[in-house]
Structure formats: C-alpha cells, structure tokens
Image (cartoon, rainbow, N blue to C red; front, side, top):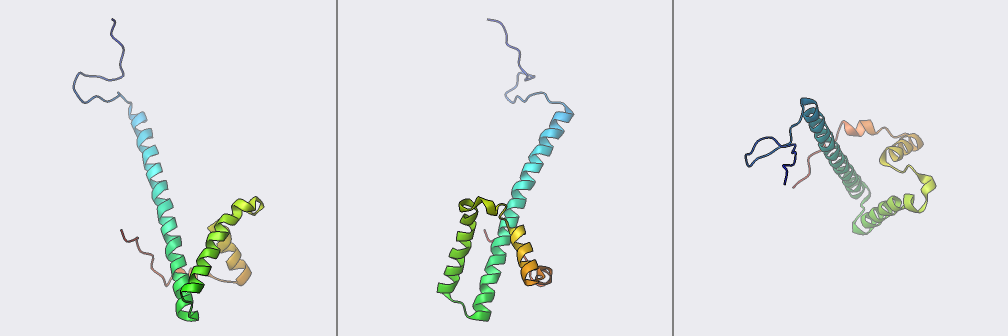
Length: 124
C-alpha cells in the first residue's frame, strides 16, 4: 500500500491542518460574526421580553390589571405572532414595523421612555 497524502504535518498526537494566515483570519472572522449575531439576537429578544414585562407592570399599576386581563393580553400577543403565518400579505410583521405604527398612529415617542428605563441582563 502506498502512503496517502495528508494535509496534516508532523507525527505527533495533535494534528491540525496547515492553514495560511488569510485562512485563519477568514475562519476567525466568520466565527466572531456568528457569535455576534447569536448574542445580538439573544439580547434583542431579552430586551423585548423586558419591554413587554414593563408594559404589563404599568397596566397593573396604573389600570389595576390583574391575572385575567394580563393573561388575555399575553394570549392576544401570541395570536398576533401567529397572524403573519395565517395572513402572509401582512409580511413583514416585526417589532420595528409595529413600533413605527404605534409611533405614527398614536404620536408616541418611545425615546422618552428609553431615557428613564434601564435594561438589565437576564437572571440566569
């Protein structure tokens, strides 16, 4: 049998493919981009959860909303999330579009609220 050519150099236990500096840079850049994207998505979702919790707390404190109304509101939000599947003509259906709608339709400036509320990392 003949020897097969290998991309691995050396005879030690730890073998790694020989890579150029450019290949290493590309691999590291891709890995960092994927990590950033994942963490950004997680942070965005956590911010949305905290924002909705704040709204529901405000309804409890200012309007006296208790369990029944809060659960009905939450179920309504869940239904809206499913609405885009049932009515594809509503696409895109996302938080940015909803925010723009609320700001335009009701003349709400969310930036005023952002100056007063602190976002925190999730409890783990």
